[in-house]
Length: 457
Image (cartoon, rainbow, N blue to C red):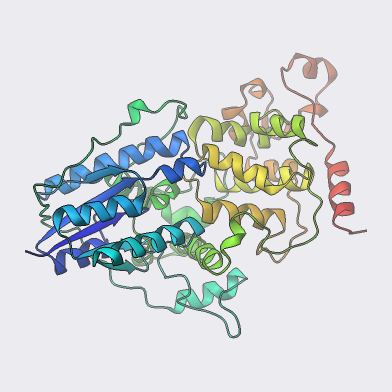
């Protein structure tokens, strides 16, 4: 009887799962395996919000497998060692998994391939599981990747994506393979109070609901901070409980400007994956070196703490940082604003901001988090690296009535409309009654420092 192992990583779903489908076609029985890797904790990526969300995803995956006659097998330890042990225990002849692009994923695959080769087990790595189009599937002439999004988007849009497949009807798992108990969200401390539920069913339900209520208006509403009309699917994409290929196809079938804008955002994920696949060092180093003299943690400790706590004196920045702490998530427009404020107004190293995001974001992703921070900081793929987002202008544009600020900065709830974005302009008696800090820095001073540091006169 042929047996195969499916190693789940950032693809915790049953729908449109190429590795699982291939294993089921090749073998009579399959071991659906997830390994709790201590290396993730050692590398500092095992943040409470993601650990809790992961527990939900694993529980949901196990439930889905049990409905089909199977179950999820959980092991703890180094991935290569645990997969090798499972293969030996059940006599598996092959292992299937999704391809990754980070340095950590590459090293994991390298060690796993070596372990399995020594045991005479074949490793099959499948592309376009975590992304819609495999990194490197399209390249420009004379380069191994696209460094600018727009030409990549044109090529990406012209490509035919692979076909999607439904969840399997039946999964037979060898009875003798033991599993450790699944983790529970309830055992995780330090999570954000507003953390959403994880899992494939929750993700599919969220997309279906949003497709009916928000997709059509996405083009004109996706930057609306107060309206909060984004899909909020990023955590589900990060953990792979939703297939990006399926999302693209369902959005295109829906049609319209909103669907087109949403597909463009999905393409940004693929763009960043192909950048990091070609330049893996960009997760920690500048993609484009610009001789920045960033302020360090020691040089800007008080400002960094104020930024992290949402006490900068700039209401829209503070609202966003408080949303992050409460929900483990932040509106995309807000992410751009707070990143610009830290890197260009305070002139603090982007890696400090990226690390704080990874500590809290449930969708904290080495690929998208690091490269989005670099895009804003001007060391990444942005073709306008000197752009600075003014938090007052942006607040008035994308939170015109101050609703977003009122929601997250209760000290300012009595300040009406656009005036909430400049509380320092209130009459002195009103200003004195507010338990709210003065601005950390004058925006003009911050801009002048940034321009001087960048050698712009």
